[in-house]
Image (cartoon, rainbow, N blue to C red; front, side):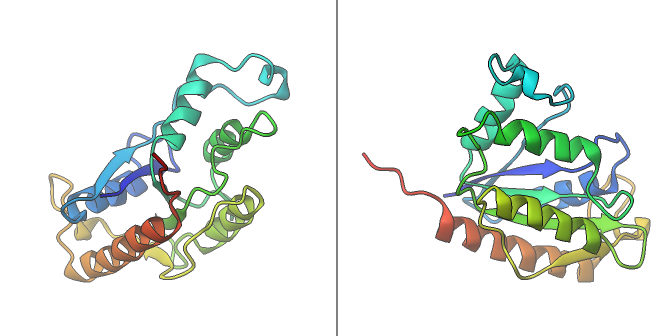
Length: 186
């Protein structure tokens, strides 16, 4: 029964990627727990903190380490990932030798109102995660072209085509986590 953390790449209260994340939570199969990994309290990373990590950063690292795998749902800002998401990843990977993403299976998705979805951002994110030794799901790639009509007034996903895409992605993400998650030794 995997416990998978999800990270929303945008801190915006009106994030369309948060809507997609909530849709994934609603679609999670029985026995799969999806929990949000919140990084909104992190200050801007600087190595000056490496000797004495702030509480928010220690909690952030612990949250990542406490799940079997991670799903990152990110927007694209200027053909890359949002600065806040990169900052959170920086905190998780430091100080040297304490990389919380090391060996952690990750799956990536994203939504945008633009026609190419979040393709460029996801490529940058794959490069960062590769450097952190996080096995990253290759397929299916999910570059959603977001349309508000896919969701009802309460935010529930109602578009059957998008639902099928997200169900396929979630099934692959769960299988990826189950394949790559470390086995607990008693």
